[in-house]
Length: 196
Length: 205
Image (tube, rainbow over all chains, first blue to last red; front, side, top):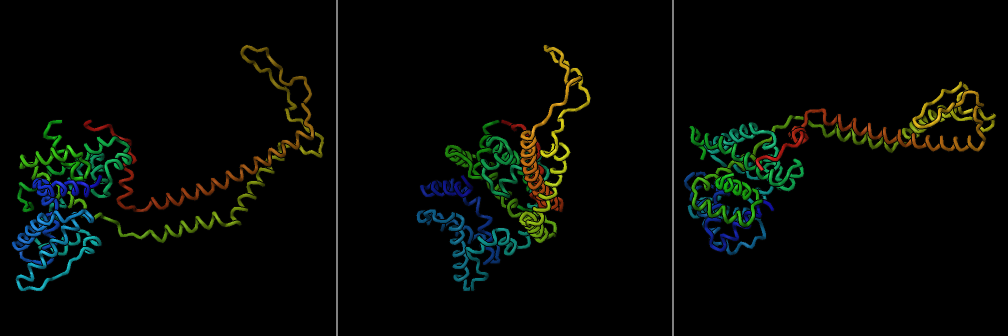
């Protein structure tokens, strides 16, 4: 089972009208979709509007999503079209033309770094620093489990093989690693940081 | 583990696509009624993105040419008949020379294989003491026995030859691997070391 399998499950539920499932998808992808929209549109409030519009369009079109491609790829197309239509409606020419190949070839990090505002970049950098520091502060066994999951994309079964421990232990270690990082991130958010 | 922790762990597994259908349903219910859990999901997605997009610090090195050269050299050595023959010849020479000191010549009168020097009494538990060779004549070796010994020596020589060749190739490979790893290596090396550490006990199971 993979993260896209979770997407598939959530999409199936959303297709049956479960808004809670769609809510999780919005929470998961809103940052990346906003970064994509910001490639076309400079104004921050317009970016929010178009991002919201993209998710609404996606929800309405969810019946047409057959799962031939990944949910994010499908959502990406909808968001890119929404951004272009927004510019056309405002009498502006679409700017940089982000394509599906952009996502596949360069990934989201590059998209964000090229398109986000300086504030957003600063906040992203700050978050990255906090996460990095929290990761380094983790006990070795927790850090190894989380790193193999997040950076290497290994399944729990594969991580269990690599670390030589039961799958349940892997699951527990990854959870505890996330807990520890989350504590640091929460503290940062409630402090003087601007990222939310 | 509390119910709250179980929900959080299920949420973590859900992020990775490792949650069961039942856990998915339970997570959806829990998130719908718990704003903090919903916020956690959002925050942990951000953390996940930050982790996945983080730049891995890499030393500015290019060892590709050295690796290619090392591999190429290794391949050449293993295929070079001159090297193979030289090794084989030296091993064979050593075995033959060594063997000649032990194996009697078939042309010569058979020489004793046992010592001319008198033996000692060997005490064995539960057995009568045996006088090994005191006062006895050395055992003669026949030509047939000598030929058999010579054949055995040739087989030993061939085995030594194979062993020497395998050992050479193995050591050469180990040397190349060690040389590659002794340079500033990327993140993978440090992770490899971490993972090679003794396995921890099962945490919080």
